[in-house]
Image (cartoon, rainbow, N blue to C red; front, side):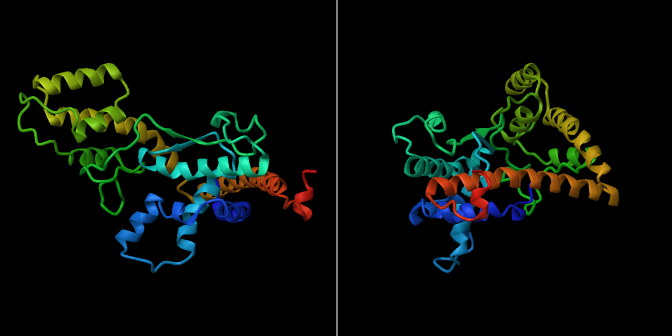
Length: 274
């Protein structure tokens, strides 16, 4: 766990990355386009607004990862990072542009070309079918009680009327079945019974989903309760400090190596790794 604002190397790398990304490429960022449209900004936004998207690349590349865990809707955000990593390695490390992505570091590059790692469930809508969001009050939280989870799962609608009516297993309810019930045999059994109208109601399926979610959330909720005290707060701060310290060690090294590759490794910080 890292407090990003306490890792100054990220901000410095952001400026170097900004020199490698064309402005029109930055403005194709899906989040920026959505924010501009939703808030009706037109061209009335600050210089720092598009820099946020550049900073996202620095957030990732500063730690030189090979894999970046993301949701399905975030995959597009990784592509500019991949472009920057290739461009930097080619321009400043002499890597041949025809090099395969997985071979860039072995070919002398500083940055691995990061890949998006989408989990087993790439995207999960809220219980009302819209994008899961706190502001829409359609999310299930890690702090929810078993009763709250059951109530929220109960809000999922399918349009099905009776237990003997064949159901569509591509509906939202079965998105939750496949996301949280990890027994593939049981999932297949539920899908078969539901699709054939074999005397299984939405309520029965929802109960199994709620139970499966509680099995995951329950231990997390209990663990969270251990930190819900002044002593627990100090433990959390300790975890953040330790993570941030380790992050700074890696980030500083990356920045020094990047500046060295760019011919900018002057000053005390640039001498540390010599």
